Image (cartoon, rainbow, N blue to C red):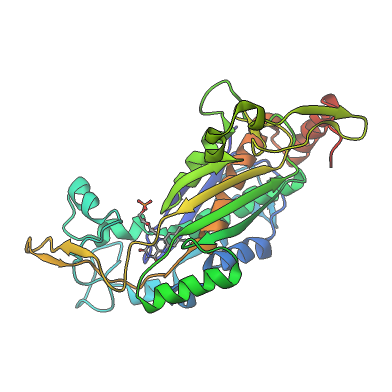
Length: 367
Ligand SMILES: Cc1cc2nc3c(=O)[nH]c(=O)nc-3n(C[C@H](O)[C@H](O)[C@H](O)COP(=O)(O)O)c2cc1C
C-alpha cells in the first residue's frame, strides 16, 4: 500500500489533524524528535507573537502502540492553544451566548496576495475568515509532524534530510539577513527568501520515469509548491542549466572499486529522469514576501464596495526559516513515499530486508 497523507484544521480552530496511511508496522517513532521539528517551525527570526502563544506538541490518536506503528492509519494532532481566545468565533457548532473573544465580526477587507478575495467569490462566503483560517500556513504544523514520521522511516534507511535558509529579502549570510528583517519590521513591511534542502543517503532508483505521478522531481516540486507562499522550485542547478551548453550541464559517469558508479559533479541535484541517481538530492525553493502588512495594502471593503485598507492581522515579518522546516517535511514525505513504493513491506523488517537486497543487487558501495 502506498503512503498517503491528508491534513485538516483551521488556524484558530480546536486542533490540526494529519492522517497517514500505508506506513509499515513496527516503525519506531520518537515524540521528542517530532516535537523538536515543531519547535523549529515556530522559531526563526521575524516570526509573529502568535508563536509565543502556541507551544506545538504532537499527540497521537490512532495507529501507534508504545512508540511503534501498528500498520494502521496514524492520526496526529497538534492543538491550537490560541483557540481558547476564539471559542465563540471559531465554534464548530452554532455558538451559544453573547459574542465574545476574537473572530466575532465578519472580515470584509480582503488582503492582496492572500486567498481572501478569490475565495469569498469561489465559496460564496460573506466573511473572509472562512477562507483565511485554512489558507493560513498555521496548519503546516501538522504537515511538519507528518514529515517527522517520514523522517523516521527514512532514518531507518540511513537517509537524512536537512535544510538551510540561504537568502532573505535578497540578503545572504546570517547577519545581513537579520538586518534585512529588522529594517523591514521597522518599515512595517515583510520579506521572502530562498531555502535549500539537501538529502543524503539516497540510493539510485527511487521514483520513476514511467508516469509523471511517479517522477520524483515532479512530486517534489508539487509538494514544495503546495507550501503557502512558495513561488518557485529548483532542482540541482535548476534555472541556471538553461543558460549552459550540454557539455557543462550534466554529470559524467565514472566507476572505481571503492565507490562503484559515481559522479564528479552534481548539476542534476541527485535526480535524472525523475529517479534518484545516488548523488545528494539538492532542492531550492523561493517564498514571496508575506502578504499581510502592518502598513496595509490598498483593497476594497466587500461590505460597502468602497476603497479601504486591507485587513491587518497579527503577522510575521518573514517566515523563511519556518518554511525551510516545512520544506524538509514535505520532501521527506515524498521520499518516504517513493521508498515505500520501491521496497514495499507490511512491516519495517520486510521493508529493510528489501532495501538491503536491492543495495546488494545493484552493488551499491556508498554508506
Ligand atoms: C511558515 C509560514 C508562515 C507564514 N506566515 C504568514 C503571516 O504571518 N502572514 C501572512 O500574511 N502570510 C504568511 N504566510 C504566507 C501565506 O500563508 C501565503 O502567502 C498565502 O496563503 C497566499 O498563498 P500563496 O502565496 O501560495 O498564493 C506564511 C507562510 C508560511 C509558509
